[in-house]
Image 1 (cartoon, rainbow, N blue to C red):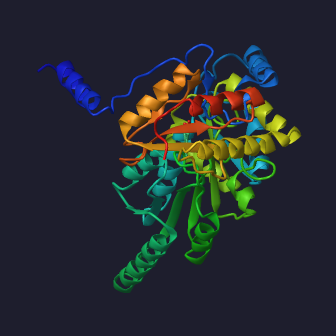
Image 2: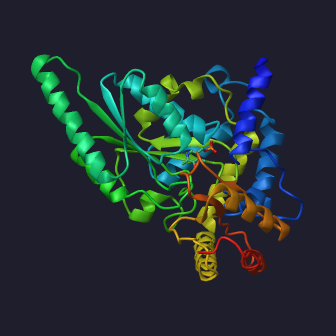
Image 3: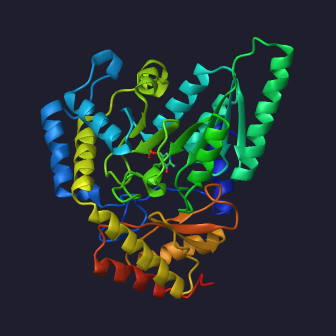
Length: 393
Ligand SMILES: *Cc1c(COP(=O)(O)O)cnc(C)c1O
């Protein structure tokens, strides 16, 4: 076999298991249920105009890495708006949320050679990839729930006490807990009060990836920490500009010293071109709109509640979540693909989510609810699902 034949046979193997992925363009006229554009801001006229103005004024691209070429003034405005939004001292933007997670996790790992990372088992792939790399020169453990995390933290401290007894010059054992604030395929929230409690008790940092909560949770959309009314200097906030903010890019928000440290050590920040001006302009405008029109968040919640209730009444397993993510769990890959195809015949675009993204046997459609949907859109979604004879409980 040639190189390429081997790749083709791997793809065929996936095809046979109904696990091959393909790219598709969103069909014209279909209502998009799959997007994370929760507040409908990516198509908001003011957001589009802000992107256009930023491109006209500063260019379509940023030109180089910020440490090489500096940055245009709008970036500082966005970073200070993000810091205000997350109620931290400072913020730093990255080219994506994926890059932000890798950047901060590996930078902190390098800061403390004797550190241990505790990462939730359901964390996003960007966190898992960074943890996998961090495991090459340090301790990384995975927890399923807070009870398990407590045991792991205790074990870590116990081991450290033993090490100290034999070599008293041992460095302190820094601990970093990492969790998705909203789990992306289920829509449920992490137990932030319990995680923060453990972080305080064991003197750990808490890295909170609020990709889905940013702009959607809390009275003013600040995210999961606002939802729980919790604030602490030991929380490092990760977010994305690419979901509710309707733009593209990622960010880290926290103490000024952390941000200064990342500018010096976060490789995806240092060795990658700065965020492009249209993305910066759009995100800044979205933050302004969210502050001005918090009722969008109310609408989002009402839409999510309406769909969860109606789909459940139709017999679908569509558990209501505090977030705008509504999973419709159907079981095997075949059922999920079939439901997705049939919904498309009804003008609804919602792709099947299959293993390994979700556990075997829990293939699903994942609806990203939007505040931008009209009553007609909501009725169209319910009618589309009602027309399905399959996949009911
Ligand atoms: C989407 C997502 C990311 C990645 O953000 P991008 O800006 O799309 O790269 C990171 N973490 C979580 C939990 C996400 O859902």
